[in-house]
Length: 409
Image 1 (cartoon, rainbow, N blue to C red):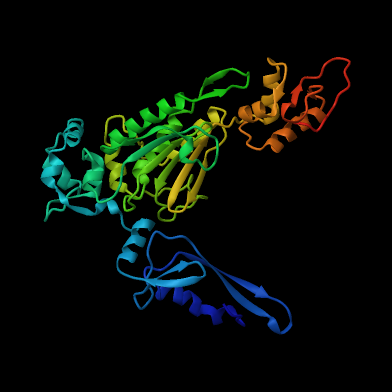
Image 2: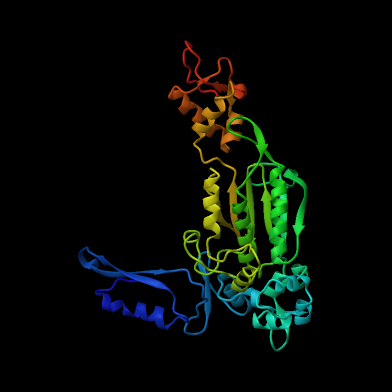
């Protein structure tokens, strides 16, 4: 904005934001005063908040920002933008090849209705819950995801869960790291969740890690944390994107990758404090199962953080990678690396850089070396005499031996 002599001269800014955009954008406007000779006056600082809506100009045009330019979009591109933002939900899209008769004959729907009170016949239920178009009797994406024996066969998108085991700690795995054949899990949402959890737990338990006392034990993650992350992926993913949910089980972490970025006004900053359901019908009906996998009270990711802390593991990492929302659960102890080193030395004569990294989750040799050096400066440990380079090791101080802070690690 240019400089204004007084705030009233900039009233058209408010008017443009309110009247020229449909619907109006959520914004804040702050006037900043300029002091300095002939440049005195005010300027308008406008902050546009993230919105779940797609906004049109007075001419009915929709523009998006891509790189350093603004581009006008139309047709299917506008629909895709509405779906990705959550202004519309792909779960309500009707499926021409999947009808009310197909839906009401699904065993999963029959089993589900046996648990619902008051008892309702299948046709009445699916029409009341808007799971079919009342005129064409075409079923919706939500109905297929919830009850179809193989949703990917009737929804024109991939919507399975793939689980793969990678025998590495590397951030970017390769095919050489793949252990066994990845599992593909199809079925109704409830079945997908239960079966995915079973497969993931089996893979996790096949991984042994070194405990702080030096013993080897199966890897364990809080079961509630694993469940909440997988449930969130199934119920909040973007079904308009033709891709499967992917769960990667590594030697030191589990990553759950869900198609789609954050919908509506959701950001990585407000994710733990705000609520927005991309697929509200799916969320609500899944919650009607006995012992539902989702509690539908907006506590999913908060539970993940709480359970990881209770297990003395570091907080999950949440980030967006391309068009995918990723939750990374690391098996990294919450304890300080120095504490872990000293616990190990209580029952072992020495510790190497490699063992230290395995215990603490530190990936850098130099960072692990700095941990040893900090303990050496404090007089807590000393370098094992005669051990240099790759064979360097550290031990608790021995009586009547000169302390050597050393630099080898």
